[in-house]
Length: 552
Image (cartoon, rainbow, N blue to C red; front, side):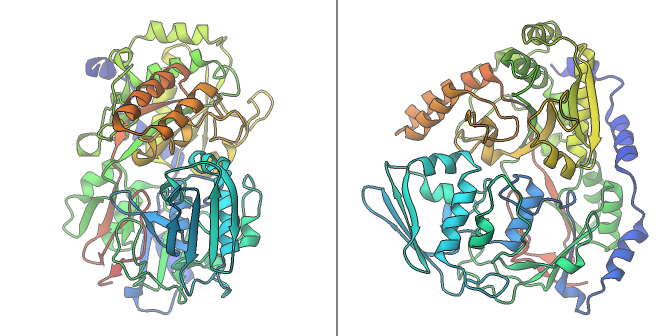
């Protein structure tokens, strides 16, 4: 497999990809960073400001409407959660002071902590939380399953609400504390917005406040400390414990060019890079003032998502073709993105290598790249040479390189690819369009993305495998009632052996329906100035409580 990957990608080297990436992403000169800082000078001790380069621009301010990590990172700053998970992925209370459930598991009571306030000064109430849960649950698979089993969800007073189930649902707390499909709490009026319409409000109850007047789209996002936030008394652990804020401001400067990001960190213009690219990591490792760390020990999984509503990927055979292409050539995708060595590995197990659900069942067909079999699957799937719109997010270097390699691989097979470049935020907005490209210029067939492994290893919280036929599942909208039944069987399994048997069936069905392809497992690093910061924590998303600025 290795020799085949190297041979087939000749002419598509990492160096050529980097040149292409630089050309499409554009360059930002170093003085621009200084101008942005000076334009909104803040009269405070520099030790109270943390300067960050996020992985992409923040354009979607609704972390319920999207699963994009940048929006979740924003969400953890501005909003709070009823429950969160620690580093062992165990749910622990956050906004909740007391929780209890009846012995039959049908009635669950929640009481909020004292002193919770929205950023406008009003009190957080149980009605706010009920509305927030309902809106969030309409978007995500595990939460939808819980609500389908719900008889009632009501506030009984200002601080207490009760969830009554029609039938037992074991993972209530795990669902409310899901670290990927995050149940951020919002004011009732905001939470009553249609779940499939983006909110415009930025009022939360979290440890930071979004500074609207300093927001510069495409360039700068600023947060200030919430003086009314009362942290829990427990120490920080993952997303749980006391969210103690030690700084006055967190300033994000959007810098699309990775080399400029690195230079800014090296010279001290920045304190923190949330997702440095592999090439720059090698350079930064030699700087004694910079720490390279990994927040998430399970890593992430590269994905290729197909639109199951429209030809040719409304036919499972065409989706199987993409899956076979990508799985048999994972090494090429990892090599192109630089996710090799300690940063990435080939992993043919769809539910994550190193996880409790790691299985190799059905993966034999991916051990060897066989282009004629892949071409035959495309033909069986009804592909007749029509353009395949592949969305390419040029400001997300890893995903951009995935798109470029996939484009090359598909063309080698004779597929007519229409590679369309855009920024990630535009892709996030555009992927909600269901109409085919022939009917809507915003329509699409395929795009690259990535997911935390902690979300992919469990078929209940794995959003891309949700095959509900109501058109409200994750972008791509696969419909498969058999898979949905197997997911419920997994939820009902009472023993590890029963669960493994169901997982084997789920995996075989996954390969049959092929709702997405996965292109390897990788471990995104962070980079920060160790001479300036301490207490850096987080998991999938970095967080900015606990963080201390020790010099400037």
